[in-house]
Length: 211
Ligand SMILES: [Zn+2]
Image (tube, rainbow, N blue to C red; front, side, top):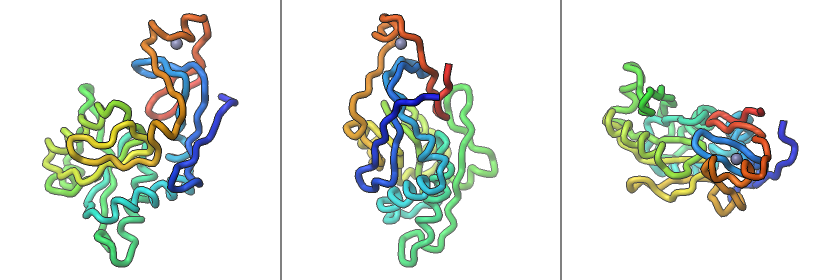
């Protein structure tokens, strides 16, 4: 397992921390010099709950029927639903928010089963993601919500490099400037590979796999 790491607290709530491991990693399309781990935020009940609380500060003013959780954000999504409906005089107080996860087909499109489609069609939908870098996956998710006739009312993320997508603002806990230097290279232009340094591991949406 990786040893060296730094932790970066969220600006609004220092109990929420990202762990960053410097090294030489491959993703599906690039080589990078840092692994930004979302694992604690997504799996620790304390941290997911703190994260949901932070996101709720913005989303509590919007009527939400459904939270679509992508990239292993289901824990945060469930706690966010609780946070939004649990208040006394908030927009969503006493409502029942559905928390769903679509399947992703071979064209990278989100697909909803027949019994979850009614939670999207004509509903106020919030999309939750771990990481938004270029915004390409997010745009695709937005298109799919539109295809199913959902109204996208909010986008939440742990980390985002973009401020909005197709007119919908992105609310996130960490921005690029919070994380220090992070470099991404085409695998054939990677300086670590050029100097003969071996890869430490592969980064996927779900986490990190040591080599
Ligand atoms: Zn490399």
